[in-house]
Amino acid sequence: FFFAPRCKMSDADNEMHWLEVVEESKGKLAEDPKNTTLPFKLGSAYFHLEEFEASVQAFASGLELVRQSDKTEDKELEKKYEMWIRKCNTNLSEGKQIQIDVKPNPDAAPAAPAAPAPTPTPAAASAVRHEWFQTPESVTVTFFCKERQESDVCVEYTSNSLCVTIKLATGKEFQHTFGPLYTDVIVGECSHTVGKYKVEVKLKKSKEVQWKNLERSDDEPAAGYVTSTAPTTRPAYPSSRPQKKDWDKMVADVIKDEAEEKEEGDAALNKLFRDIYAKADENTRRAMNKSFQESGGTVLSTNWEEVGAKHVDGTPPKGMEFKKYGE
Image: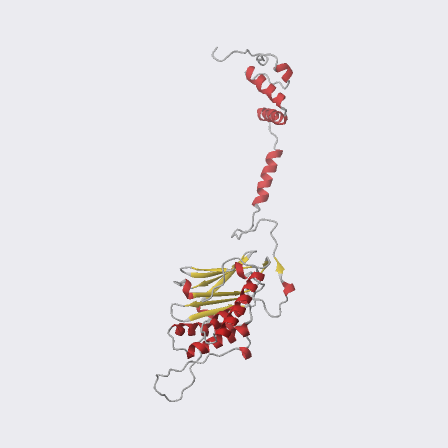
C-alpha cells in the first residue's frame, strides 16, 4: 500500500511532489507500456492530487496488464489494483465509476450458465465502530478493532477527504471514506497509529475552526464555519452538584478578605512594624535591627544617625526593671 508521507510538507510542496510523480510515471510508461507496476504509481499520484477519474483509469489499465501476466508476483498486485479501483469509485459519480469484472478461471470445468458473480465489495461500514473528538488544532478519528497490524491498515489523506481501509480478522475488508471533510486538512501533518485495540487517525486542521461534524453537507456554505476562539475563562467541568462553584472567585475573595482584615492588640502592632520595615530604606532597616537587638527588644528606632553612633541601652517599661539573661 501507499501510505501518506509522515514528514511535514506544505500543501504546495505536497502537490508539487505528486505532479512530479505523474510526469515521471507517464515518461516511463511510454518507454515500457507493459510494465505492471507503473500504472499503480501513476494512479496513486493522481489519487493524492484528487484527480479521481484519471486515477481510476490508471488503476484499471494496470489491472488489465496484471490479469494478462503469468508472473506470480502480479497475483498480489491484482488485489491491490482492485482495492484502489473501489476506493476511487467512492469519490466518483456512478457514471464515471469502473466496475471490476471477476476474472474467469481457465482451468475450471464448463458449467451451466449462472448469475454473474458479485463484485467484491468492502465490509459494511458498520462492521467497525468509530468515534471522533477534536481540539482547536486537530481532529482524531478512532476505529475500534482488535489485534490489527500496520500491514492490515491503509490510510489515505487528501486535503478534504479521508479514506481508511482495514483488513479484519474475519478476512473481510472494512473501508470507509469521509468527504468532503468539514474543513480542509494539512495532508503532510496528518498521521495514524495502529494499537492493540484501535486505529487512531489524527487530522491536522488547516484553520482553527470548530467542526460541527466530520463531513460537511453539500448545502452548507463555507461562510457558515464557526471560528474557534481561545476561552477567556477557565472551562466549567461537569458536576452532579445542583449548583456550580466558581473556585477562582472564592480564592480571590479570600485574598481580598485577608488584605482587608483588621488586626488588634500585639498583632496589629507587629503588623505596623512589619509594614514600616518592608517600606523602609537600607539605613532605616539597619537602625531598627541594631536598636532592637542591643536593647533586648525594648527600643525600636528608625534613626540610623543616632543609633549608628552609639550602643543602644535597654529601656524597660515604666514600673519594670531591666536585667540581663541569667541574672
